[in-house]
Image 1: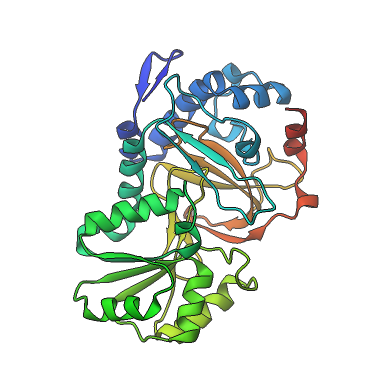
Image 2: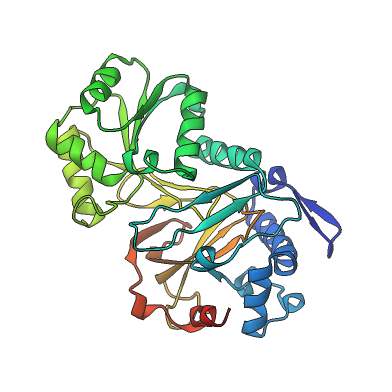
Length: 330
């Protein structure tokens, strides 16, 4: 819970997860911006480098987004109490991992459960099978924590490393509707090597070849998975270590967000220009109470009129321009 000295209000995760209108979203976003622009030191410093006075920001469209790379080099944190947990991003060994400091695991649990419930209903009606070997092989994964918690709420399913035959047997014996959630390369391995024909099952990929297999366009990967598993479409989960919330796609690579999350597209040459429909992805995740809710990612994508979006890949390093270059001065 964050206290906003400007308004004198308490900003709680329950306030955020109960947002039900654009007006309410905008009000909460401005309230949280005023709090974090004062209490999150890297964000406060970045805003100062931009020459922006937070008191003069009156529209959500004018809120500056913090370059995500700062999670690698600074402690992006806005609370007085020590964090309960620090989640880290995966890396290939040649990159520095991001660190997301969270004041409360309960806030995280409430958020990812509410997001899941928004798109898939109560977790208890599902069995979730996690095929996340690269994440299980390291500590500090927010994805593993989320899936582990959801599996416990389901009361069925489980984690599997490379024991594909046991995974297939367990799924075949399970009468409940199932979600097979896995990192891209592991799902590709399963579809290619064993090609089990799945019934009463949603296949959900979380992205990431992690250097294990060659990179593919999403459409090509999904075609391979559909053929291998005998299914019509592949669902996707979009999240990252620096976020608290997740977006989900029920097929065709079109993601939708919960009510407390918003995705915008920026011109890669002008980070304050959000008029393009295609460009760099900016995310407002109001559940990021402990860190910064306004994140300038390094993903490329497209937004649509109904608020949904698609991801088209990563921005090449040479294409990250504009305000992002100020990071080198911090």
